[in-house]
Amino acid sequence: MTAVEAARASLQDAAREAALARQRDRGKLTARERVAALLDAGSFLEVGGFATAEPDGEAGRRQSPADGVVTGTGRIEGRAAVVVAQDFSVAGGSIGRLGTAKTVHAVETAVARGLPLVMLLDGGGHRIQDGQDARSFAHASPLIRTLARASGWVPLVSLMLGPGFAGPTNFAGLSDLVVMVRGISAMGMAGPALVKAATGEDIDQDALGGADAQAHAHGLADLAVEDEAAAFETARRFLSYLPASARAPQAVRPCVDPADRRDEALLHLVPEDRRRGFDVRLAIAGIADRNSVFELKPRYAANMVTALARLDGRPVGILANQSLRLGGIIDAAAAEKGARFIAFCDAYSIPLVSLIDVPGFLIGSGAERSGLGRRSAKLPFEWAHATVPRISVVLRKGYGLGYIAMAGGRSMQADAAFAWPNAEICAMSIEGSVDVAYRRDYAAAPDPAARRQELIDGIRARTGALRAAEGFGLDDVIDPRDTRARIIEVLRQAEGREHGGMPPKKRAIPPI
Image 1 (cartoon, rainbow, N blue to C red):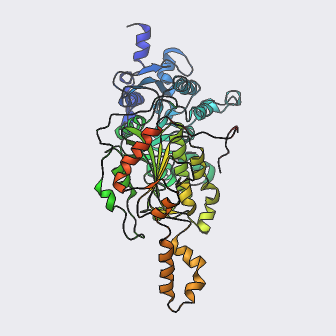
Image 2 (image 1 turned 180 degrees about the vertical axis):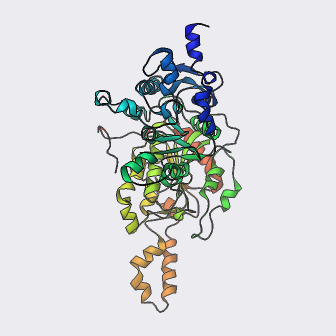
Image 3 (image 1 turned 60 degrees about the horizontal axis):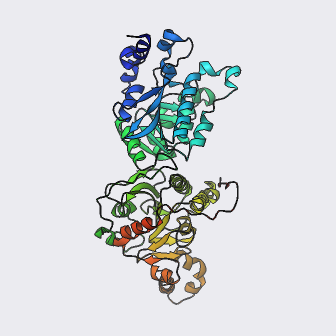
């Protein structure tokens, strides 16, 4: 065995069993096992494996093999990708000087070659031993800047596979997909020990930033899964919808689901009682290619559904109001969730479909305290700047500013604006409008309740889908069973088309 072969062998798990035992005792895979589980078999080509913190040579390799981060390229379902895997067995996965340089190089490689970047995160922020000296730390790492500039050019995926406080949390915040594993993952701006030292708060890792907290309550993670295998499968599935880069061809797949398939269940999906909710995910499933729906942030801001799917094999992004949660009303979290999803789809040229059943925006003192006045503006802001084809379908309610914020009608220059036959489109809740504008009228009537209902019925007669189409606010009123075929035909005609017409500004300024 040559010296190079011996040095390379010393990096492998077989030569480091004692050092890796604690990782396995925690029920976690090693960094190299994770890389092998994510990538196609035999496709990994390591970069910077011999890098070590001081001292150089064999002693350095024993103390900090690969300086605590495994980087390189490989293939995921046959497509090239760049991978970064933190090694928790080396200084708790902290980021050393050469480990940082390797990670920056990996991001730069992804950008230069136009390849997705997958980060397998398991460790803290900067290595304290390297960072508490202004002589070196004052330079500051370019990693965050490099990741920020990669955003929107190549897909960025973060799999949080252990504690990932500080730096890794920022990496996740810049990523297109963040997946956490229940029981082993955590992230946040600082871990429990630092929180207690700085604030006196005594809190455990899971309560501070565990998988369910971050995926369901805070929305930093897109999905919480049960084990590492599920995390790798989630990353592979997510990337299957995306091009390798913003300028690469779309990830179109052969489709055996007929474009003109009619789902009879759609005809009876919306309840006759308009106060009753229904699961809009059933509408999405009935319209999309079978088994193609991939929902993101399913339990965070659940009044807004965001999902990737396929229509005739083409990737699409679907936004839908969920009446089973807050009646489908848009609050601050839902507005921001939808806005980021629109920006993500637009970056990778994925067409957008808006399924509208919205009673408007949340109102009241609580809404104002949440900053909804500004945060709500993010949703129409992103629609207005999106360049991809977009289609809107009013399933039931299209009320007020919520209708505009969901790209209803002509508001956002949709390529097609449809409605189902029983849809209602108007400026506000019909009952609410009567109580505000006509209270004196019905209060003075001999039978106030009957007069109020008469007014409601009169307004409702003027808010239907057919009347909206008569005023050319819609392209057509369609049979719910034809929704899939109509959307697919529009997408076929609009393929490759981008909206233009922006004024010659340097950039837009997003709402706070």
